[in-house]
Amino acid sequence: MQEALLTVDGLKKSYGAAEVLKGISFDLKRGETLSLIGPSGSGKSTCLRCLNFLERPDAGDIVVEGKRIGRIGDRFMNDRELAPQRREIAMVFQLFYLWPHLTVLDNVALAPMKAAGMSRAEAYELAGQMLEKVHLAHKAKEYPERLSGGQQQRVAIARALAQKPKLILFDEPTSALDPELVGEVLGVIRELADEGRSMILVTHEVRFARDVADRVIFMDGGYVVEQGRARDVICRPQHERTRAFLGQIGEGAAESAP
Ligand code: ADP
Ligand code: MG
Image (cartoon, rainbow, N blue to C red):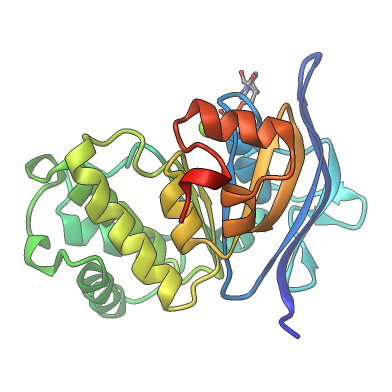
């Protein structure tokens, strides 16, 4: 029996009168890759942002290794109290947000030094190792603007790894990239999945989700419509809305998938 790393129970979030998350529940086992798919506006980003309290949920519990995220008893944590929890849940966004005036190596070493209080020597050694992991050790001394979008996103992944997170959240990490650069980023994510990282990946790359994720959640309109093993949800969706979505994005349904 694998123990749940993350449990999300009854997550709700509204912006004004608009209820964007209407009670989301799922869990993630240690070492599992979960992919979150669904139409634009269905609440995927909001869900990820709630997991590390970049957005404060209106209701529901988020529990990592038995500890509630963002709350102490009945009150919400302040930013200082949240900081160590946030470090355990790294996030990789569509846009990379690298510091333009810092080298690639400095970008990766910064957070471990500033946020985690690591010594300079330790942080730089770790940063070098993480750049090797994303196959960019040879770019350590370059500035971000000299790198392609795919390389910049791999630096952002190295930066996330340098947090030594328990869980990595990816929000459409390849959506801002030119098509020819998508593969190198997905390649790195696949390697992380293969080495047993715990990850949640929001993506439109449904084939990739089918091949790399252990499980897939299909969200629509703030609800989890369907979840299950990746191949089951993507190749044999049970719900009409899942079928319609997969059809719209050109992934057909059961028949077309191997
Ligand atoms: P997805 O990532 O699935 O495309 P989002 O979580 O970004 O969906 O958005 C879900 C809905 O919430 C959308 O209708 C969006 O306009 C709305 N929304 C997201 N963030 C905010 C915000 N900060 N303020 C108001 N509305 C928001
Ligand atoms: Mg989004």
